[in-house]
Length: 124
Image: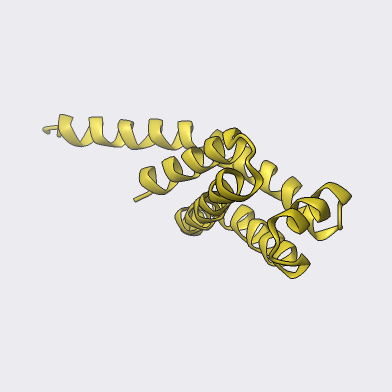
């Protein structure tokens, strides 16, 4: 009986990738559930932030719903890539808003964008 060593290594690599990705996905889900609840519950800081952006409070609700949707999708194995893509897209918008409108350091949205993008790439 012969064992395909290449297939065994490939299976181990996939398993290791999964083990490393799940903590990232869990972290992203927690961060975005927290962020979406602040937006949807009308946290004064979020109300002020979206007022400063100038698109209206309706955009705060849309963003909160999209963040919550992405957080749920990223935790379901069959939709984790879609969820990560939703979250990366939101963070791309946040990066642009931080740099061009808010004139604030884009550190947090930048890190979240990179982590979300990593999940999109790794789950291909």
